[in-house]
Length: 502
Image (cartoon, rainbow, N blue to C red; front, side, top):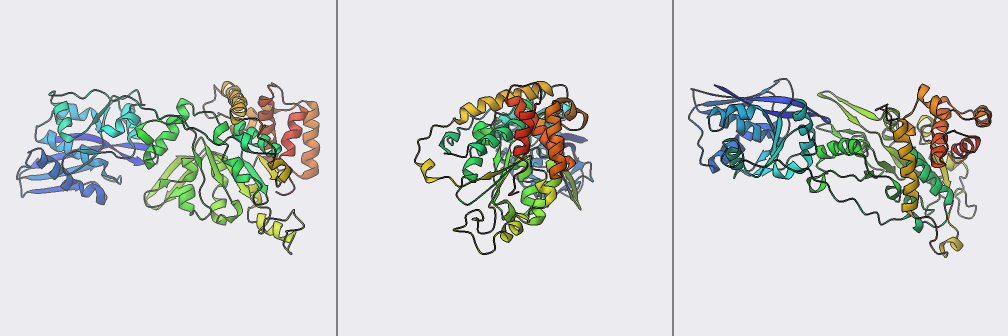
């Protein structure tokens, strides 16, 4: 008799169905696992044997063979323990085989039979729903998996609970979806004194998901401004939360087992490797750009990053996804993020201050910012100089707009964009619009078009730069409550494009 259970193997955020076949046949006692298992999967036989022994179930003196099909698909991870145990229990006629075959299972077994949480419960639930099956997982993973309403999710504490559930002795109630409490942003824009132009750039960037470059002397407030971006961004929508949580589930970053509606804010150090930023490594794991999906990627000291790392950002910025191609894996991850970069104007940082600048001014500025290639710099929608704050401004009381006030305008602008792109699933914010759709929504009036044409010819804007100005102008018009893009909107968008320091 061949008993079957089902689980998944992960390829990026996609989960492929795997059939776990178990045969108990006469022969010398043995327990073998075939089907391209990695070390963790091969060790499952010892964990399964010990867990069954803890339940007073002895393996027969026969040859037990576990086959993981398809056999040419690499199987990685400890989540294969539970489906292997289920297939074996079905082959021993301890649990009903037909009940097992209608369920996708994943979970790691302790030696005493308890179930240990594993990564990827949310993508596994998505795969189970597509196959019209239920999902069996550790109880700690049930809250996140239950967000996929199309699949019934059962969360169990031990292998014994699983046996009692399938035999009808003690059915386990379906898991309920969990949601973590929203993050409290204790950093407010009101605390930033001065820098009104930089605050305006932050608001525009947040409203349309535009990439922003901040250039200024040390201590001018670049990092302080960037740290307040989460406070003006709206919560994740339901589809965005599901996409983001699937990536976080693969990395074990879902707190309290639930879905988080807070937009991610990632700030890698400038010594981070290429695999850490774009993804890769032994199991082609997602990198910082994917962990920042639907959120913010803040890269402080931007020119100090490795040149090769910076250049790998060019394609993901345009396409919103990254293909990690390795000899044994081709994995695609989404990475629709908002890039905020901060940089000093030169190596010493004081190029604009004659009393503190080094002797290499202005050559040092060109050399330092020259580490960022022209094609990459061209992909920034907004470029802003952040001047040092005067001491007189520091003595003033904090009386500017709060993050909550700015967040209301940002949310209203994003709601306008959601209505505009509701019939186009691939578009969400103005930064996503291109081609005919961009011309339709962002073509300025006659005066604005004339201004844009003169400036494009005078300063040699690239085609990419021209279209990015249109996107920013459309966002400014949305913040202004205008259905039409007018000359003042184009003028302001151009003012953020033609910064001399960048």
